[in-house]
Amino acid sequence: MADMKYAVIIEKGPNSHGAQVPDLPGCVAVGSSSEEALELIREAIELHVQSLQEHGEHVPVPSSSVEYVHVAA
Image 1 (cartoon, helix red, strand yellow):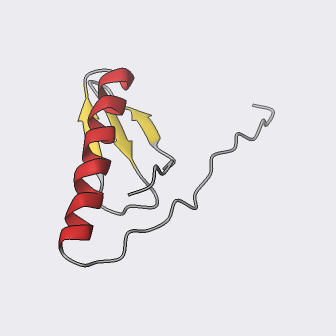
Image 2 (cartoon, helix red, strand yellow):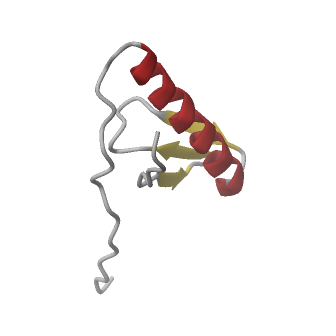
């Protein structure tokens, strides 16, 4: 498999950090820090893609991107 670069969204909760991959629905991870969440989501992505391949399912090509919009608050 070629290297792919998926966008990951990290959300800080009261006691943990959650990570999700918009291009891979259901691919999520939770860690005690953003660094741990990123490490765990990397593993989750690899396992998710491997499972899709093993079951002969389509592996979504990364298509999401992240931008920040500044607004007056």
